[in-house]
Image 1 (cartoon, rainbow, N blue to C red):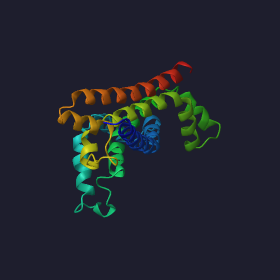
Image 2 (tube, rainbow, N blue to C red; image 1 turned 135 degrees about the vertical axis):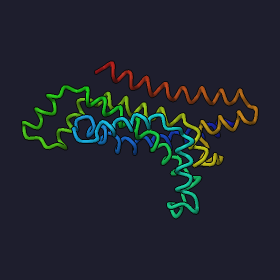
Image 3 (cartoon, helix red, strand yellow; image 1 turned 60 degrees about the vertical axis):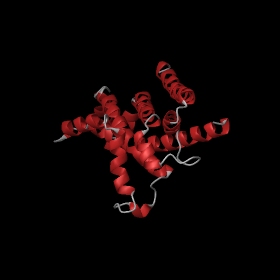
Image 4 (cartoon, rainbow, N blue to C red; image 1 turned 180 degrees about the horizontal axis):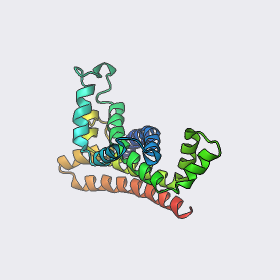
Length: 213
């Protein structure tokens, strides 16, 4: 496998996973803040469901979205099956419960006086939520990094929704699967180390941020 091809595969992996993680963060962080500070009927059930979904098998996500995006599925008109967009949708589903649950835990860990003081001083609920996000920003960053780590290494839904098409939907994990199936174990391990290096770099950056807090 040529270096240019490996770079292309890495580029597809990062584009899909980063876009999915960003989209999931935009949805998950508000959900996590709402659950962390909210007190309403059914809250504990919702938190439990989110924590359970953190273990959602990637193949199950792939099957469900494949049914939705297939030509005869309810979202077949979008024609995104076997595209990076379909892969990002699968990774979005996987990242959402992780980021939401960890955000909820981060907000619950804040001093409750932060929210009470903000509301007493005339802040709206939205402004109080923004304050909570700022107070827990590094922990939220760690939650988002955990979501990224989950999706960048998944392979089940990526193969089912992307099809492992060369120079289009082939990611690091699907390439590893392909090379291993061909008996190219050395190349598969090499690609695995590259993927681990990317994950290590991200975690080191997050750890440095937490240490400087």
